[in-house]
Amino acid sequence: MNRRVLPIVLLAALCVPGCQTADNFTTGGQDIPSPIGKTQKWSFDGNSVGELPADFISVLGVWSVAAEGSAPSSPNVLRQTGSYGNPDFPRVLVKDLTFANLKMKVRCRPESGSIDQACGLIFRAMDSDNYYITRANALERSVNLYRVVARSRQIIAEASAQVTQGQWHTLEATVVGAQITITWDGTPVISVMDQTYTNGKIGLWTKADSVTAFDDLEATAQ
Image (tube, rainbow, N blue to C red):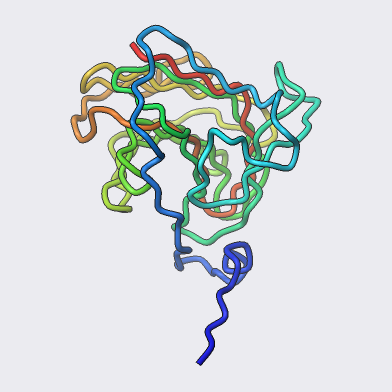
């Protein structure tokens, strides 16, 4: 009997809230420690519109560079446009580079979504199923920090925040040892200790049907 494999985008369209779409599992490539003190930057300016930059690996989602005249400092952004069910998490990992202690930030703009309107930073990812994630949500007006263990998302801390649809914001994570500090638009909103992961890859994250634009991703190993 022949089995027809549905493309992931079609699977997303068929997925109702409560279902989960299969991810493209990845370890993120090689394990190359980012040099201490060097700031790695991804502005997406030099990348081809309509494509995912070569130094990113897609785990789930429809991620592509788009021309964006309203971005804070760049004519291009990276946008996730795929629509998925809850609890699906569209995400990409930066290929090869690993970080232990780090400071990272990104500009993000939640654009639409009926289930969620989220933008997030992944850090210390062992692979695409095990990582830390901090995310801002325009529907819930909150910034949360989670650990994801074997695909299971576990809340560590949460904070109320002014997260507005259609506007650019800045999300930051600073990690030194077990100390994790999350900053939203320049204001620290979460400061906790957690020792689940000590180093790993970084990446970007959304949830469910969130359409989100990202710009000016930076990460500095400390």
